[in-house]
Each structure stands twice: as structure tokens, then as C-alpha cells.
Length: 331
Ligand SMILES: *[C@@H]1O[C@H](CO)[C@@H](O)[C@H](O)[C@H]1NC(C)=O
Ligand SMILES: [Zn+2]
Image (tube, rainbow, N blue to C red; front, side, top):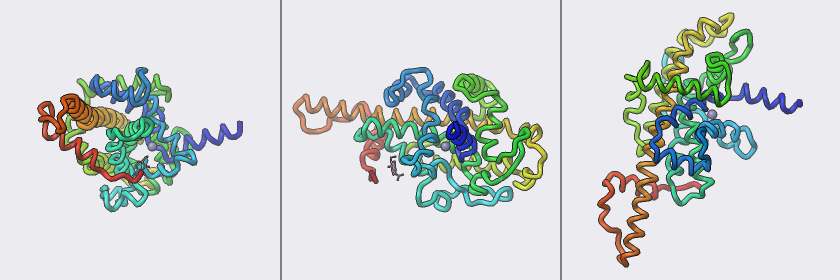
């Protein structure tokens, strides 16, 4: 009983990005935009053909980091921007990533690994679970901010509870909006966001969310995502500084009303980006390599010792597939 309670508190107050609700919602939004081929690849990798195949594993990385075996992965959930909010916000990969890695370097590692056919099925599944989680983490503005450890050290009051600004953004404000944190709650939130993306508030912005995203330049892409969210620390999260929020009697309703739209935007953005990212990985890494393997098999059957003209492949696809095989590995 006692350990259950302690575990519960640790979960609620740990340095996690979006809580379970946010991550599952990002996953459900993403599932909606995966191509049929990407979806069946992801279901195969995760050995889960249910309708919640991404949502089911979206918070695995937060559980893993809190185990002894997974403690090494804790720094991968954020990038600590050493900027100066609210006066100036910025992310600089060289300055901010840190020697033990960060969310941006993790995106690069797991984007490479998930398409590396030489790894074990377990390693590929791990890579996909990390990607699903980290794309979500990066859209949480306070996971792109060093100030007070992502505002974990900013004491505030929300709906009568003394907590910190980080956990309000991760968990308590989203849950106040949706009224729960089950997978069913996440699915229904995702349905709302998907209709806003398709033909509502986000319709005209969605193209800009993924503009320039390139799995051949992961650090550049993920740093852009981090910068986009980090800018919100100055403009939305603490525009008058942290002390002004600590001094507020209660962040509900005024502050909550001011920021909840941004929380919804970031969740929608995360899901849409994740889908595009996985579609690109599947197309450029997984499907292209399958085609190469098939061509090699054909040439061996023909008794020829050379790779036939890659007629079915674009030069870009071949180049990408080759990059995947040429990387160095620390494991
Ligand atoms: C890449 O991921 C593997 C598997 O989780 C890990 O062992 C390795 O340390 C990571 N490498 C880098 C450079 O992050
Ligand atoms: Zn996380």
C-alpha cells in the first residue's frame, strides 16, 4: 500500500513530458495520418495489431526511465535550452544538448536505428517506442527549457493544489480540459484535434508544422521543433516571468484560459509531425531497403554477381538507404 502511494506520487510529480493523456493523444492523432503501409509496418514492429498500437506504447519511455535499467535514458526526454525567458528564448543544439544526450540527439539515434535491419526485432521495437514518445516530448515547451529544470522548480497553485508549473503543463491542465487520462479520453481528444487539423482551426497551419522535415537531417529538424516549442516559453508559458506565476493566487481560471489553446495546438502538432516522420522513415528507410534486398535476391537467382540497374528506385532513395548502412554504432 505504502509503496503504491509513493509510486503514484513519483509518477505525478516526476519530470515527465506530457503525461499519459498527452502522449496517448499524440499517438492517436499520428495513427490517423499514417499510410496503410506505415501502419502495418509499425504494428508488425510493435507486435500489436490493435487499434491503439501507438497509444499503447506512447508512455513506455517514461516508465522505462524510472527503472534502474532505464535511468540512463532520462536526459533524452528534454533539451535544456540555456536561454533567458521571458526576455529571450532560443535553442542551440551545440550549447544545449549536453554530453549525455538530449531529445534531439535521441531523435537522430532512434530514427537511424528503427530502419536498421541489422538490429534485433527488440532493438527496432525499442527505437519505435522511443520515437513515438520523444516527438511528443519535444512539443511540450517546458521540455525545451533549462530554467528551473523546465519549471519543475517554479512553485504555483492550480485549482487549489500546490504544485509546479511543469506538472501543470504536462498533466493537470490537459486533464482539466479532458476530464480524465484513460486511453478512451485520449482517443476522444484526438478525434477533436483530427477534425481541427482536417478542416478547422489548424487546417491552414498544418503544412507549416512539417515544412522542411527531413529524416536525412534529423538534428536540424528536431532542433527546429524544439525551437518552435521553446519560443512559447517566452510568449505563452511565462510571458511576465516565473515570479508573476508563483505570485498568482491560483492559475485557474485566468492563466489556464490563456494557455490551454496552446496545449491543444502542441498536442495536435506532435501527432501530425509524428505521422509524417514515421511515413518518411517507412518510405525512405524501410521500404527502400526492402526493394534493394529484393533486387539483390533477384540478381542472385539470375546467377549474376552485380546489383541490377535500380530501375524501381530513385537516386535519392538509394542514397538514403546507403546512409543508413554507413553509420557508426556505439552498440
Ligand atoms: C542509441 O541507442 C542505443 C539503444 O538504446 C543506446 O545504447 C546508445 O547509447 C544510443 N546512442 C547514442 C549516441 O545516443
Ligand atoms: Zn518523456
